[in-house]
Image (cartoon, rainbow, N blue to C red; front, side):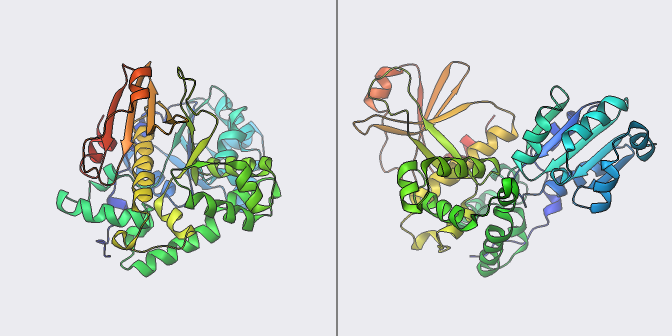
Length: 387
C-alpha cells in the first residue's frame, strides 16, 4: 500500500480557530491529547497566525523548569516583560504547574497563556483545582477524515481510508512511503511513547502487564469485556485491571463505552465495550498489519475506525453527547447510541450491509422517538463531517 507523501504543515487542524478564539487575557488555554498527534505543530501554526509578542518555552527543558520554579510575581513579570502571550509546550513536565499558572494568570493583568501536555492526568487533573474558573481545555487527537479532505480528493478517499483502517491516523505516517516504515514507526510508538506517561504515574512498573492487557482488549474490540476474566488471564485483581484501563483512557489509548438502559428490564447496563482511539495502535498490538483484503477482522477494524472518527468529529466541533451501546439479554443490540438534549440517536455500524437493517423491535418499542441509521463505507462521511 502506498500513500502520497504530505507536508504536515499544510494541514489545518479543525480545532485551530476555536483555540485562537479562546486565547483570551487572564485565562489559561490547556491543550491536551496523546503523544505524537501534532500538538507542538499546532502551537507553531497558531503562533504564526496571531500578531502578538510571545514567549515560547519547553517544559521538558531543565533550565525552563528552574526558571519557572522561582515562584515570585516580580520574577514572572521580569521574564514576561513586553510579552502578551506565554506558551509552554510539554507543561506536564513542570512540577506544581497548576499552582504556578494560577499565580501568573492572577498577577499579570492582560496576559494570555497557552499550555500543552501529553498526559490527561498530569495536565488536566493537576491543573484542575488551582485553575478552577481560569482555564479552557481542548483536546487534540490524531488526524480526522475531515482534516484529510484538505489533501485528498474524492477519488483517493476510499483507498486512503482502507489504508487508515490498518495504519491509523498519526500525522507522522504521512511522511512515510512504505508499509515497513509505518509498521516500524507504530511499533516504536507503542514501545517508547504509548506508556511513558502511565509508567511515570505513581511509579507504575508493570509495563508488560499493561501491554498484555491492551492486547487482550485489542482482540475484543467491539465486544463486551469482563474485567474479572481479564484479571484471571493476567493474574491480577479486577481492581488493578480497572485501574490500568482508567489510566489508558486518560492518555487516550482506549475509550470506554457503557451499556444504555432507561426503560426495559432486559437491557444490559453493567458491562462495557472498549475501543482504541487509533486503528494503527490496535493493529500493532495484535501484530497484524496486513491489508484489509487479507484479514478476517475487517468488521472490527471498521467499527473501531468509524467510532474513533465520530469521537474526533464531536470533539473537534465542540459537541457534547453521551455515547453508549445497547443490548438486551435476548441478544437484540445496537452498536452506538447518542443522547443529547433529550433526544436519542441509534447507529448500527456495518462494513457490508447487503440489505436494509431494521431497528431492533425492543428498542423501537421502548424508545419510539429515537432515530435509527446504518453507517457503512458508502455513507460514513456524512456522519463524521456533517454539522
